[in-house]
Amino acid sequence: EGDYDCFIKYNHPMIIQGYGSKERMKDLLGQMMKGYREYQGEIKKIEFVGIHQIESNGINIQAVIDQDVTLDKDGNKVADHQKVLAVSEDNGNTWYYINLTGTDKEKISRFYPELNKKLNF
Image (cartoon, rainbow, N blue to C red; front, side, top):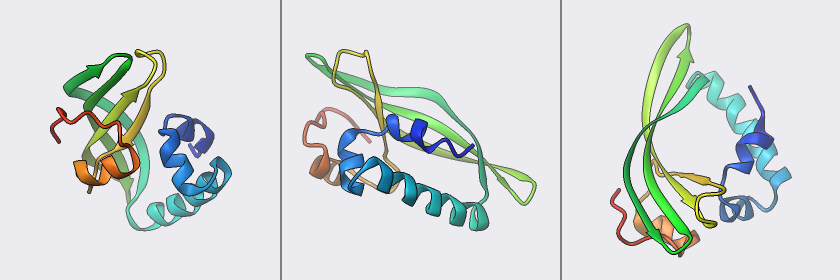
């Protein structure tokens, strides 16, 4: 629905920093989504469908979660299965999400050094 402010608040602050600011991330998301709709389809639904693994270290909780993204491409529904890293740094009161598509532990650890080494993805 284009509510990029809502989407951004669920991204880990280190990801937002990587874009420079929330406003810069919002601008880039808008541009990216316009191109995405033209070539890939329109995102209709994102749904968490399973939890693979949960690890905690004090108040830091991390989980590898499956999500299904439903796209509408030229009137056809297409499902894309993805993995995300869910992170809470305050004992589960707030959560941030990092998409794991096309990445590995080494890449994630570069911008999120607190990545729990026990996680498998």
